[in-house]
Length: 84
Image (cartoon, rainbow, N blue to C red; front, side):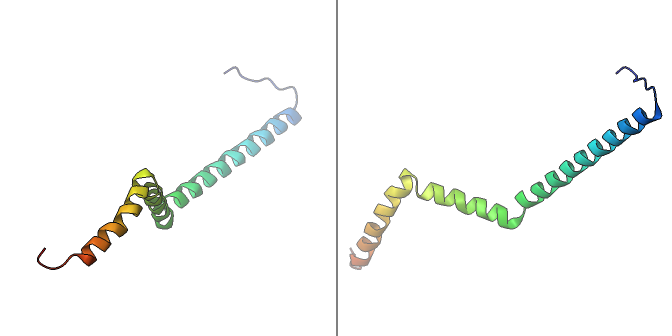
């Protein structure tokens, strides 16, 4: 990177102010990223993701078959006589 040449102290001050603002923006982005990571790794978030995964699996095509078959199987066991 080529060295910049300044013709006045005002230009240097402006450049320093810009760099200071850019540094603060970068810092705030880092803080926000850390907070989002903490939220995504929290127990509640992980549990919610697990529940969502289970729901989506249950209501998939296999889930539809299971929702149909489970009541039939339960009814069969209830009506089954002992010793059969």
